[in-house]
Length: 183
Image (tube, rainbow, N blue to C red; front, side, top):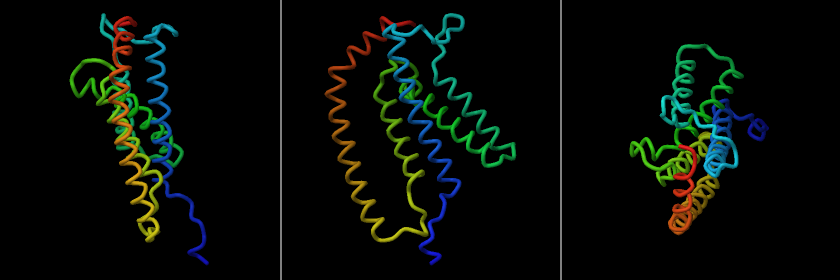
């Protein structure tokens, strides 16, 4: 009967799920907000210091540094660790949303590398959040995992193929929006 008992998720899985959710919603919100600002649908919320636009990846870097310091030097209870997981997901999204800009040291916000980095991180966070515990893996998990892996590979192939087409159509409009938007 003990094997049939459903165990609560380990704290690590809970933290990974919080990170995944915070990352996903922050990425969606930041992309939406940037588009709205550049289209002048909302006020310019960008921080400008001495004529320099401070990109949101910088906020992410500072938050990542703070979370790392707290996790290294403070003793935390479960609730505090949960808050750190949410802040970590938030900070990772802010940072990797502009991955292409720090990878190539500048350029457009709409670089494909940023989108690819976000997809990879969402996949990793999703695996960490929902993969069964190693002790509980059975044959059907491997079969389902193989089918999911094949499906994801096909999905990414089709996604990237469609993004190439979308890039040809959409990127010129986004670049024009970026040039006309607040600097």
